[in-house]
Image 1: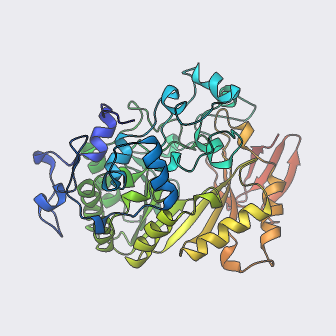
Image 2 (image 1 turned 180 degrees about the horizontal axis):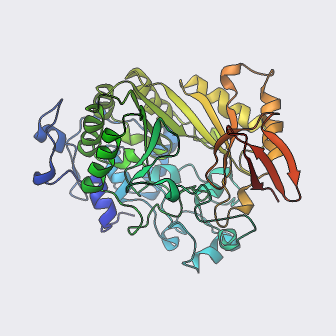
Length: 427
């Protein structure tokens, strides 16, 4: 099932900069950078097979069954994965039997996020079980349309702390740089569902980037930038290098981080070429969003290995999700598996109270129970920090005895680093 790409956002993401915006390439010629292009259905792929992630047996079998006529070098090209992503329910129904809750979602257009799943990640989803962990995390259900007390479209109030487009400046010495509103796969519990996939709110592109870069340059107290979105690794090599080179030219900027789900949902993006580019901008760190041990495939191990070999410290960020990963055994298997592919467990997040997220949220006590089940029962390297990003813009608060201030009815009381109390809806 091959599709034509007509999404303007997708076109921006995967295509190179036009000539009048093309930055000087620091480590390769413009023609070399442009040679990673793919002519879809004409199937011109100029990357060498050695540069691509190789397929596991499961992935190869899925390709043959559901994308007949597709060559392995096409399947393993990240741009092919983007162009052939599943974005409509009638397409999804060709791969799996949709449940009543999923079918009801297909009849509505009011959920915050559109549907988008890469063919690779689709190969990991159950055909018949709507309760499978990975399937629940990316396939919309009617539950997303049910709003509960304490939920908000932007519960962390990031827009309130955005002095210029693309920048969120909450902590004094660091900023969040939102460089795109596009993701290769949309997680149904996304914190930024209020802005991703929305052209009117995703102020991205060279002009907006330059305003953000200038803001960072003017604020010498900023020593740390987290590049996120959307997902920055959906940008072309040339656009990504454009951003990194501009940021690296700022004298007071000490290190750069990239937050991404791409190595998990589209590991084909982590080519040797990309790893080589990233290696030139150290110190560069990467936080990767993992959800469940079923995501730890041979392809993901290859992708993380390339990033680690390129000198990047890798950390994991996992959202605690009801019925998906909210038990000690699942979390332990995930954390142990991450260490084996050189990813250090970093944060375990309480699910943010975005609109329509009640079916994903666990009681806070469940997270504390999981941390207790890890601490002392496995290496400390496998124990993430359990945090709540406090509603109302309070920032990340680790859930330790001195931070958990009790309850007020259906709300958990939290004490942050300023000794202020914040309320989290915990129904």
